Length: 191
Image (cartoon, rainbow, N blue to C red; front, top):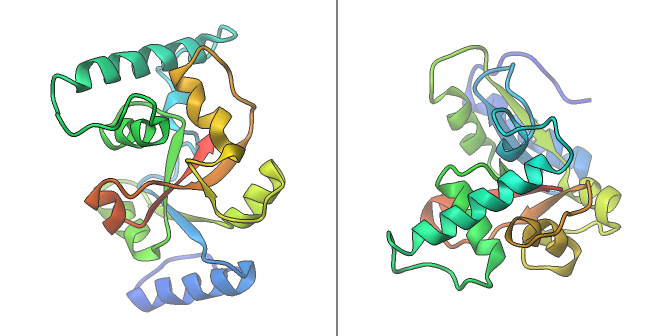
């Protein structure tokens, strides 16, 4: 059983991270919330994206993706190839576009920093065992890559006129950005 309650010093974070690693048997992943009322849904599935009509989120996601890629070429010369959907998806998330990615970190300190970076309500840190999540959703108890076949339908759906399975996996992101590298970024990818 993991402790809960107030974290007062950095040593408390280290203790909790070690307990999670021991309990899970793998490196845990952490996610911060600056407000306990925040949703655990990726931004594409949160309001104001319409949720009331079947298929509506799918259409909004496709439109946002098309517009982002179209406008990106006017703003940068250092972009992924058009076919490199995992890097585009990470780039869109990095620039605040609503996506099906939810940010996680392998560092409890990164999660703690973002939990308290903006003043607000009580902050909290979520922890996840990615290998168990992946086993339940893809039959593989391993780190999955955004470039791999087990997640291809989830990654490609915003770029094509297809829907993905309603499942969630933890995926290793491409380290194409120094900020993502420094934050030990990984994502849950939601269908």
